[in-house]
Length: 160
Length: 315
Image (tube, rainbow over all chains, first blue to last red; front, top):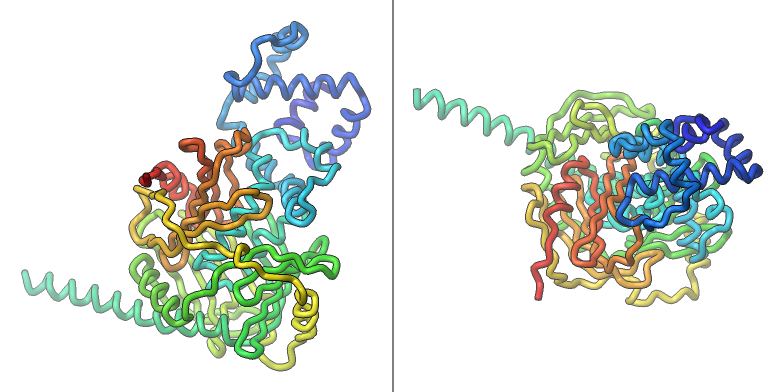
């Protein structure tokens, strides 16, 4: 099970597998604890300077017990690659956030629940990115040739 | 020997002039057609492993252009462009997304763009191909350096409309493509949505605040690749932002790079952010408590180089 969660965090599961696993994690408090713990581990690896020193002993123990998780996440390169592939499959959520920010000026609740699935910071930047992409396209010379078609880049992503 | 060299140079420059001449004419036609021809069709956008189908309608009414793009896959989204404004049409509600300042007089903009693209890309006519049932002239724009992508366009021979666009990467692989699968040029085109749009928009006040204001921000880019010229520097509102954002836009004639500057809100997510969508690359960076964002239809290395050389040169 732990390996499956690890695989999920690394974006190695198919969408349907991920969905099943995510719903199990939500229901099982034990699994969701693991889930939270793994993310903490990930955070530590990525930004050690921002993590409070006073880690609970439980976490420290688990850190020692979980080499499986540590190995793939330690490589920064891999993290990035993960961010890309996952961004592609999960851009969906990010853009819906953006869309809802645009239209309602407040986040949609279910998005908040899905947040852990997003994992890496690069992907969470997605909702904001769209505003920049749109703003850029207004003036970009590519707009001149492609006409409004360029907006599809952003429009299409909003609805996933 | 000297004569020989001169001859070669003459031949070379002659050849280039020929290619430029062709591209010049074609680009003029293309740019005019994009604004003046009425059309309605369905096109496919393809990038990486993503594929989206949308419909597009472009009509010219009372010397004014209206353009509607609707997604045909998934949930419905519609964008209407008119008079430099972009509207999102949702549940019978018009929501203004952006409002850009009026374009300069069209021909001047065109001339600038043409000369810029001539300097940075070598245009080559490469045969006639069939797209969406029409014969199209294929034109390849090969970049002069590797700071930009190659572009390939398929131009309808009779109308000058672009039927297909491909942005090509380093290995000539398509990074993103737009292609019409069905296109009606001229004839009877549904314009009922223009009336609906005007009605929905009626009563909405347009404040000048909504547009960008020209400024001199003091932010400069030291390592902007050759050929990119600054075409705009404005302070503008942005969706989801409380403060106005500085946007500096550079163009090489075919591709653009925008730099956004705004106060960093300390959000961790803003740092080292990277987004790729088709040919668009975006990177973030924080300098002097300002969040700098660079985005453009250029390779990731170009965006990174630009972002790394942004600095404040004001008082």
